[in-house]
Image 1 (cartoon, rainbow, N blue to C red):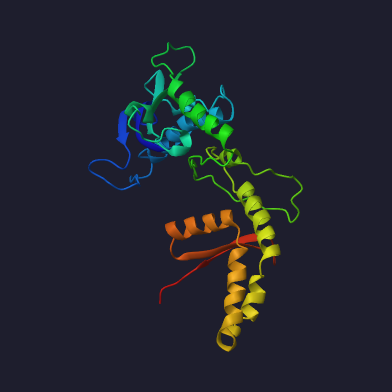
Image 2 (image 1 turned 90 degrees about the horizontal axis):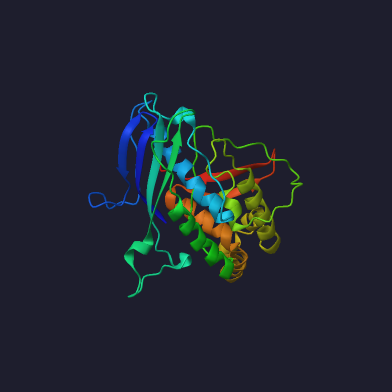
Length: 280
């Protein structure tokens, strides 16, 4: 799923703003970077995207779910109403729109509009969320037939993001379903508690079936004295690696090549650590 375009009408500082997102004809990259001085409206654009996408994540859970409305204080001061329109392309196989000779290209595109009027003012724009529902229904159908269906990655990390203290004992039993990944993923106070608990639970299982890192380090001299045993130990440890944790670690190394070995540490307190490689 790719967001191709966002149009803001009377949102934040913008009377009318249309932003094409990469890749475009001029920019073949998959990354769009917003650059501007403080107060230029970068956060307004990102919050508008998060607001619009919240309707998709809620309708992915339930057919008539309601996302976040446009806050009234986000409407341009001189305007009576505002709207956010986004255009999305989704041709993923998990959604069920894999390309074939009979596929109509327009089936890949989804456009919806979210509108908001000030209290006591006439509506200037109209919300139209039909395509949002159609896109969500496609993924819900795919999940019905295969609970391992890949879902689009959607996350918004504002300046208010925090990592809360995690208790040593996790008293709440979580199911860690795919849809749980959307919990608070677009909220203005998102935290990493659920991710931390998910990572810790899977790492505990991984450690039970593998060789603890400290033990493997103690046996490292075998790399010189008995290479066959050392090779067997590494193969045994590699086969015990959790596939989902491996996917997370691989993603981190792709985005941040100088970061490696994401893990949970329990002393002197419970925290998450990662190794940073320094070039000398």
